[in-house]
Length: 384
Image 1: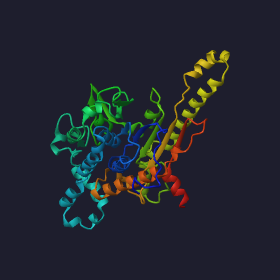
Image 2 (image 1 turned 90 degrees about the horizontal axis):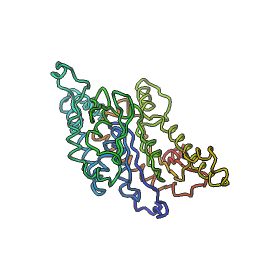
Image 3 (image 1 turned 30 degrees about the vertical axis):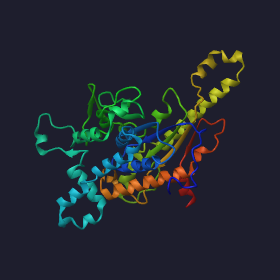
Image 4 (image 1 turned 180 degrees about the vertical axis):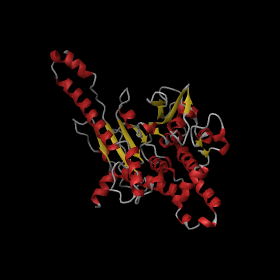
C-alpha cells in the first residue's frame, strides 16, 4: 500500500515523541531492515536516533551517515553489492551442480562460505594459516572498512544530525559497550566492531581494546534507547530478525533453525515487557509524588523514590521478520540476490502495514508510562 493511501492517519503535531529505529543483528537477514527503512523514509517518522547491533549497526550507519534523500539509495547499493556471491558460486560450481542450484538459497549460503561476499568479507588465504601466529578468524573483513568509507559520511554522523548507537563486546573484559555519537566520534572501526562475530570475523581494535559482535551479549539495543538519560518521550520502531516465538521443529534442520532463533532473539518479548513495566513504574512514582502532601514529600523515602520518577512516555512498535516458510539454519549467511530482494520487499510491506494502522496515535491512559504494539502479530491472530 502506498504511503499516500487515505487509510493511513497522518502524524499530528501533538504526537511529538522522538523517533528511534532499533535494529537487531542477523547477517543476511538485515535486508529486511533495509526494506523497513525504505517504507519509513516515505512516512512522517524519520528517525532521530538509530541504534543497531551487528548488521543492524551497518544499516544504522548507512542511514545516519547519509542525507535523508540518499539513504535508501545507499542501502540498496550496499545490499546489491554484498549479494553477488551466489553468482560467483554458480560460476565455480558449473553444470555438475545445476540440480542443486535450482534452489538459490543453498547456493547463496555456500557462495558466502566459499568466496565471502564482495565489499564485506573474504576467506583467509591458505598461506595465512601457516603464519606465526595464525589468524584468529576464518574471514578477513578489511573490505568492509572500504565499503563503509565509500557509502557512509562519517562527518555527517559526527555532526550529530541523526544520533547513532552501536553495541559491541570488549573481548578482554566481557563487558558490553555502546559507541554513541552523542558521546564519542564514530569511526568505521566502531561499526565493524559491532559486527565482528567470532570465529568468522576478527576482533576489531579500538583505542587499545579489542571488540566482538554485540550480539554475543544482547542482540537488540532497545534497552539502550529506552533507559538513556536524559529521558525523552520516544516512539521506538524495533526491527527484529529472529522470531522469539515459533512452532515445534519436526526435523534436525528445523531444530537448528529454531535454536538459532531462540539464541539471537535475545528474549525480545520478555525484555520489552520488563522495560514497559519499569517505565510504567517510573511514571506512576512521579504521579504519586505529585499527590503527596508537603510534609511527606520531604521524607527520606520520598526523596529516594523521586530519583526513579519519570514523566516521559514510550511507545514500542515491534516488527519481527517472519517469512512464510522456514529459511534454514544458514539463513543469516545466505546472501543470494533473490532472497535479499524478497526480504527487502517483505520489510517494506510490513512497515507500510504497520504505518497504515498507527495504533500509537490512540490516546494513552494516565497510568501508562509505556505501550507496545505488534500490528503484524495481531493481524496473524485474526487470520487463524
